[in-house]
Length: 109
Image (cartoon, rainbow, N blue to C red; front, top):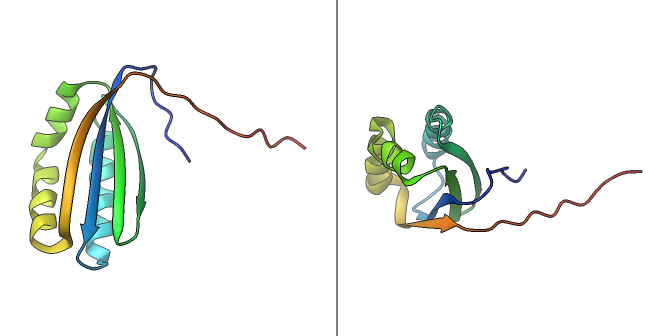
């Protein structure tokens, strides 16, 4: 399901990555991190897809909340674990969303 976000503007953190190999611990940590992010008032949601190459786009009310998340201890520890064990490569981009459009096919019978 596509994440519903607030009316723009808001921010998107785009995280692209390449895994060394599939590891169940990676998915467990991701799940725990998402639960932590959900507790932040300015976290709006996340869309992601993963195989060897992954992309996650998280949505945030403001840059201040992104900074709170960046400093979160569980997030920081997970980033270090990722560098040591999970990732061949990753890149993070932060963008301000000025407009968004949504299409959803109506499935009425």
